[in-house]
Length: 486
Image (cartoon, rainbow, N blue to C red; front, side, top):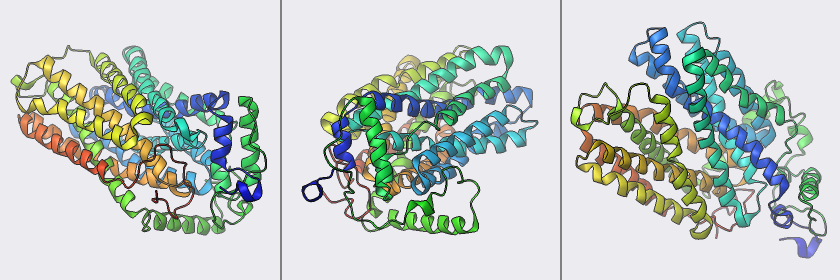
């Protein structure tokens, strides 16, 4: 739009012309390192708890508090890091995520006592929750035609991170202990921090902020690397938004952590503006529905995972319900469980551009429900395990597709904030599911637990139907106005 009168082209038209090439391949690697570094920090919770329980004589409550602290940090950090990316740029958001995650993760390895470790792991959660900033950054370099499939390909990096952490723990923990594992797990975040100096700012973000000359230069570099040409003319904005010159807002990409009183005041104004846009008439329904779905998917996903763990645990008093697990096989179990998510994610990658985001989510969610319902009656341990892992697998793929949809449905100006707030709300589901799911399973109420998770999954499937639009094949919006119009 706009090129008929001005002879110019939009960001979407430029990205379509340069296609998916060498530049996007490099961007995929960079964003992938960011995603799997966050996955590693979360996955290591499965390994350090038992080691600390033995070394520091922790109670079960104290051991659980380590995970709760991380989820608490993620609850805050998901929105906070997203807001930074929206207000100060994707590169600044990426640097803040990498800096906080690396510093807190490395310092965790030198924790002198339990309290300091809990505080530092909270900060790790604060940083790791910003992993969605990498997704937003990568998303804004991808042509519309195959955007969904490539974002799901990027999601494979999360599973790679889980597998890498399980392998690293398997090697490190028996030989050198948990401190070395924490230190080495922080290394990928350092790599991201160093590479971020070479990562370009999103041209879509620059154009939305009125920095069209900078956006045009970035698009020119992409075209050069991909050995393609941009459309004739100059870059033009495809929306009408008055934005203050970014020389005021971006005095430096490096100063986000040390603001002046003036920039603090401007930061508060941006925060209030972000919140008001998320609850505007155009986005209110999308925002509230996203909260519900993120809470439901997170509750069901972690609930099923905890159900697997509880049935596998020697602490289970329900012998008839237990899943036999060989002693010392924790690393193998985590590795296999994470590996099992690959087939469903591959299915989602194949379906998301063919059937659309909503249909893909619906199919995967219903498959998760189909596989958990047989557990209303008791089965052999192998069957129970297969059904639980299969349900978790399809639920994970549906959740990943939801993350893609939420990234696309929010406009550029609030993409990080909107997704971050929804993701943060989802952590509430992750924090309360142990109180419900594990208690029911260890209390020998498997049928009731299955009913509960089945209802939550069904609610998720119904909720998907109420999303206002399908984002397949649609260009990304930059501003809130008319966001939900077909």
